[in-house]
Length: 233
Length: 159
Image 1 (cartoon, each protein chain N blue to C red):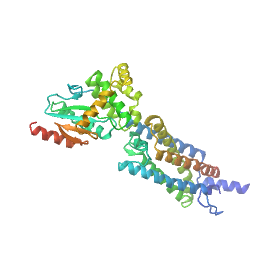
Image 2: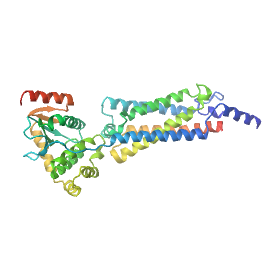
Image 3: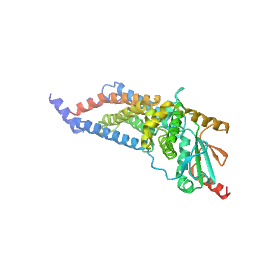
Image 4: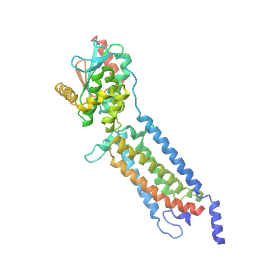
């Protein structure tokens, strides 16, 4: 017994683990976990604000932003599930104050939904937003792209309906539109139109009728716009 | 004697400690999985996932990074630390050695909690299951469970 006591005493002196240590480490682990989740969630939340440019619908029913008589016209074919399309939309959005709001560039959006069934669903949802107004379409468009990369759940019907509420759409009319599938023909027609013009991938866009495949960084896009403007197009 | 329970080989009996060896092997497997996922994430490579696109969907989701750092890279750091700790066990000064089971417990506990969160995201938010991520979740859970007896032994020995 005396030997056992001595052994215990020497172990206590050498500084072993106690239940308190275990509880402290477990608590610290929970805190670290909480911090990681908060950092992760913060990055996952996206929102959009208002539009600060002219919007409308072209004679053939496509949404546009920017002055219709702008010297530069960009017609883009995009899939809402395509990450590069989102990058391209971001670049255009960033250049908006210098080119779209100043009447130098008009952007026309066309769906080229082909990556997954959710692409077609998201495209129909965007068309349903356009049914209500062009302003709302662009807000909805921005929100869809802002939520890219969050997985296919981002394009589930409940989430698409949530986005509709977030951008201030009439949610009842939006839901009816999406559920009825009335916009499917429009989405398919957009893609067929793209195919007839040689579009095979996204994003593919036309800069004053010159076809360009793939997204460009903001700096290169700016250079192209400046080059077009200096040509007096 | 309790303090030597999680050492790879008992200095007294010479018996191999299978739990520590298993943790070491699992940490090595975890390094392999997380290194592969880190590489595919940083190099924008497709993840080998059979015919499924699920792994890429998860890997390209915004949930795959924490504060701009790939989750896979955090996993790689954690598994490397666990592997190093299993190697150090029994080879450092006793007052440090006693805390190694506690460190293994702490790191693997964070891993288990975060893996549970990621699995929840895969099932109910992203709607895609990345089998590499699931294998990592199983590995870290196994390491966590294996760390418990060693921790208890160390606590009893100090008791």
